[in-house]
Image (cartoon, rainbow, N blue to C red; front, side):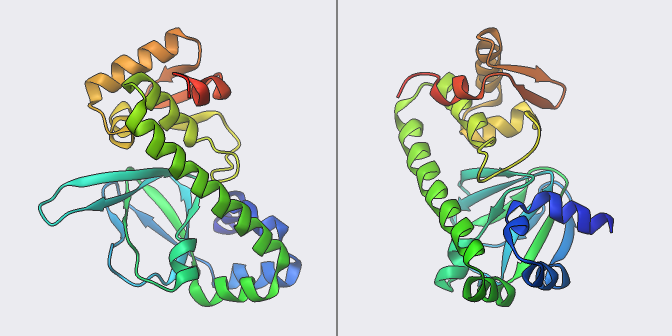
Length: 225
């Protein structure tokens, strides 16, 4: 029952389904726990499930043969990823790695496709999610190239509170300065400086191992653009 409640709290899309679809999903979904730095899904392997973060924080990243790694995005609790690979029936083009201890739910490919074939509500939800995902990555590409580090940290934090992609119930996120720096692709020292600037501006409050957002819209627009 505890796992069932955690899943229902994690999967906002579950609540748009009718009882028949909910029953099938609850029967098929699985849950796995991971330690920090564990590899959850590997680039180059065929996607076989839709992934939902039940607790903790994961990163989506790509790496090269010589060991260089680029972070694409972070996914906090409540976020679901990997629908694109399932829709295109292709191998994953990125690694999914635990930034901290986390739990991950998996909806099997067969169940995912069954929902696509039989639930209009699920299709509508997925369409909105895909549209939001495209907007997120366009915005990230833009601010990574044009914004100063303070603004990049502001946007990085703001995107973790996207109400559609990551529909959490709190404006407090368990995340360290090191993790923010990794996702924003700047040093930990520079991240610390940026967080102090944003805190002085009244946009957030830095807590031990966490960030409390005070002005989400201010973070989204910080630095212009």
